[in-house]
Image (tube, rainbow, N blue to C red; front, side, top):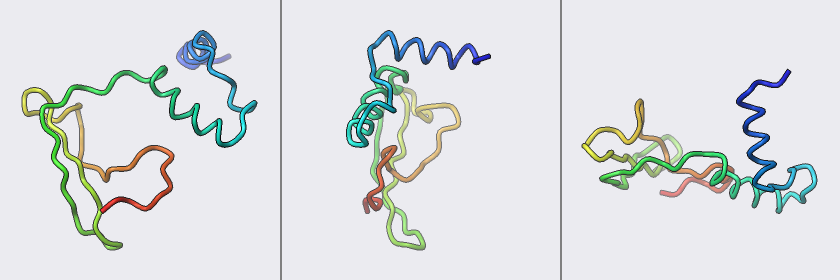
Length: 95
């Protein structure tokens, strides 16, 4: 038995005509994985302020991007400052 949320996600992917990952080349799969997020994930919250900071870590500087929501609160409940990195990005972190 498949969980209802998993079934809803699979139905959405099918309705939007996204190709099954196992039928794609690795390069195509990476492309569709990145594009799929616009279909399967909600829009990010609006932010009032974005600052780019750097912090020194044991392996060198890392980029930090804290964001504030419309009323000076964190952009999302429980939001934290995390190193800036894109999902699936294997390049070294930007300073």
